[in-house]
Length: 106
Ligand SMILES: [Mg+2]
Image 1 (cartoon, protein in one colour):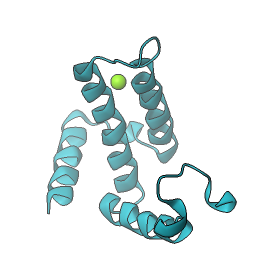
Image 2 (cartoon, helix red, strand yellow):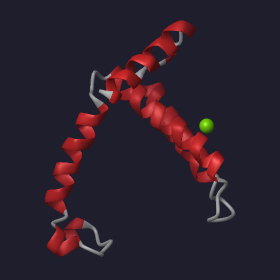
Image 3 (tube, rainbow, N blue to C red):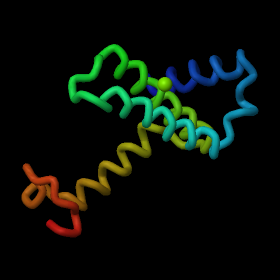
């Protein structure tokens, strides 16, 4: 599966550099937020962001998300699917379609 291949590639990348010692859950969670801010910075002054820059920052966010999931022994694809199932229940199509209203206001 692609998710496992990516996980193994990330593990190898980190191990080769001896960076595991820096990758506490806390540090990885902080890194996600920092990279998310860099992603947001792409849109700071204009909604027309440079797509190449967005690609790089989005990849940083996703990379740290995968690293944190792995650090916590979680399967990234699995937890996304689990949350999607919960969100489907919160936002039934017949009430949520075309609306951005929060689930408790639907
Ligand atoms: Mg970055």
